[in-house]
Image (cartoon, rainbow, N blue to C red):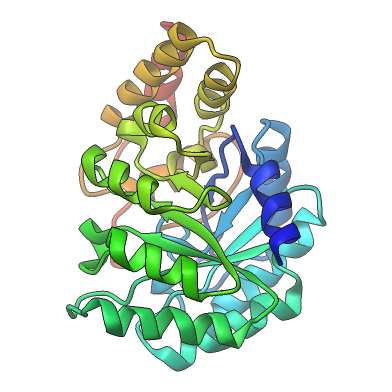
Length: 302
């Protein structure tokens, strides 16, 4: 297991792993597996180093469990070993999370990530039981904790991180989407040296890398990967000025996304770039106007 985790860390280090948008059919609920290879190839061609499938941008928690299974399997097949695939196995019901974890092992996912249960508050001991159960369901699959308390309500405390890192044989690290740099610092300090820390908040992406994050998992990079690939490459090369340049572009890109329509906007950008991934899961809205031309203008102005 340690060898698996070390290899995964090397493959994800200094790069971006997009939180892949989930292609959907016209009903808005059924995964369009035909489009997945096209999207995976698009991202590979742009230089990404991994994929995070079925997470927040992938709308995994909004899909029926059977659709999540179809999505994960299709993504692993499309990647075909060319880059690591992390599938999201978090769920509000324990049996669903266990089913997703077992399936991740069956399809040969490189790792699984699980968000905390959401909406209802839970103490650390209950969250520890949740992650221990998921880990036990797939004892040969690397596990990343997924920390996004501003959305989920529950988060991963530094103490819980340290506990799980010590207790879980399959513990590989975490994906942290917090906007709070001070808490990110504390989580990084609680992470063992061999752990993988992937930052998910785009607004502080460069700061997270500077503090010690190994790489990025971001939602916007599933539609516009180029600036994120350039940012991580510049940072890895020690060119801080170039990395700052690309982070400014990313900040301006974020300002182009219409309020309350982030998922829909990401999917619309992909459609405007030639990859028809469908709409956001209803009732989440789509943008009323094109988005990609605005972002193209931002990029071209630099």
